[in-house]
Image 1 (cartoon, rainbow, N blue to C red):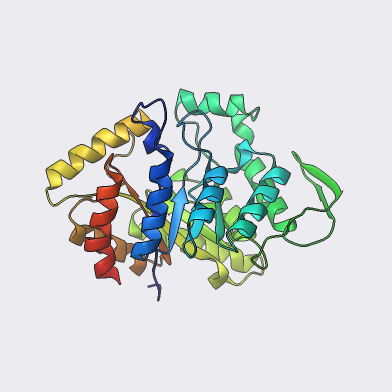
Image 2 (cartoon, one colour):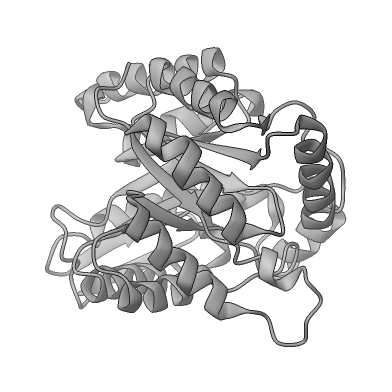
Amino acid sequence: MADKLNIGVVLPTRGILLSGDVTPDTELVLSLAERAEAIGCDSVWVGDSLTAKPRLEPLATLAAIAARTKRVRLGTSVLLAALRNPVLLAQMSHTIDQLSHGRLTLAIGVGGTFTEGQRREWNAAGVPAAERGARTGEIASMLRAFRKPGPVDFSGRFYKTEQLTLQPQPVQQPGVPLWLACHARTGNDRQYRRAARFGDGIMDITDSPAEFMQVIQKIRAFAKEDGRKPEEIHASYYMTVNLNENDTHATEEADTFLMKYYGVRHWGNSWGPFSNARRIVDRIKAYQDAGAQTVIVRFASFEQKAQLERFADGVLARLR
């Protein structure tokens, strides 16, 4: 069981586009970040997609949030790194770390090709879908290399630099924390080895507490093989909830939101609970018992303000 549990919330950078309004309510995202900080959340997070699940661009959004907050940490959950040039990504992340005075965590993932929209997204970025995992590994390696001042030489399959010096450097040392997305249901060890080699932490999703524990154990075992200290790898879990005393109403609202969000029913029983605060606290504690040091909560609802207030009163109050 993790000694101290950090709590984060996901901001609705996609949800505000689902309303169908010509002008999305971007102020809602910023005000929710301020409110999350005020109620004592440890971090706020934004997701990523280019065209498959349209939303506000995550790094630009985090720069705006940095200017509106003082304490809360800022993170991506998760950034599809292979959609971006790694040198530009490093410069952008270092800039946000400067603007936020050292509050950024960059969580990156390989991303999926489950839908036609996702496949078109990779095509639009000029990235063959089959290469996205290998590219993510190279990008993670480059992001770590750019943490150090001075010229960087990198020669990979996809990316190369020669005596390239990057400014600015991040505020945080040894660099902006880099977390990699991992979960048991992908069915391969490549993700674990990549996280063990390059990650300062991992972000899991959809796995049960028992599966999550197995993921952590595998990654830390690989980290030890690579000569790293296993305890250096931070363990986080991303969960989707809906807070309502009436389970039926909670489930119906969550289902409506998630169907519009993804366009397909593929989540099964991997997310939730969609229920009252006590059940959500119990679920969070189950992941803490399994080794989570951070739990990040997304609200499956179009009523984000109401969900955050219920979360403050019913969940945070119990966890603190």
